[in-house]
Image (tube, rainbow, N blue to C red):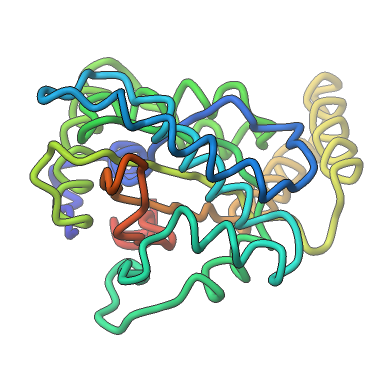
Length: 262
């Protein structure tokens, strides 16, 4: 979706094209495909005519199983899970691309990222940007990245939430009443591990506290390091079929680029 840069700030666009949170950000249980079918089938008695604001346990379980399969186990291990939670005729594509993609391609990309946020909704959310901002604050991300994904003020947040809802509806071609899931992954650093990142942060802080001339160059270096790492967003639309929730549509990529680069 094109967002005019004159109307929205970079932070607004970034947040609007983001979304989500769920409890398993850090520790994930060992991969266990046999439990998935029972978990996602809980939804059979949870789908009233008018959907509640909060997602049902069945949809949450489907999204959780899907996100786990994206990053855990071998291709052979996850194939049965994808078969259970993703519809046979599901559409998989990247943002702003006409041609179809595949679960294998998405999984290959996700393996180079770490899940930082996941949120399930029973309908198109109206608080997407705010939810993401809250998750980002708790995530293990560089300070510069957190600022990039956090609204500057309340008006900015309201605009971001509004744009995000419209973007979800447009991207997933939803009526607004279907269950929606959003996964946000942060790109792993290919050249430095977490201890290196912590060392960088400590070095920048020490220089700042000492108020030495090298502070500016150190900050620029840290900013450049963070800017090279980009998020991966995965949007999914679900459907209740034969008493269980399945994923019918998947769109993924880095929507920040679609908004002009943030």
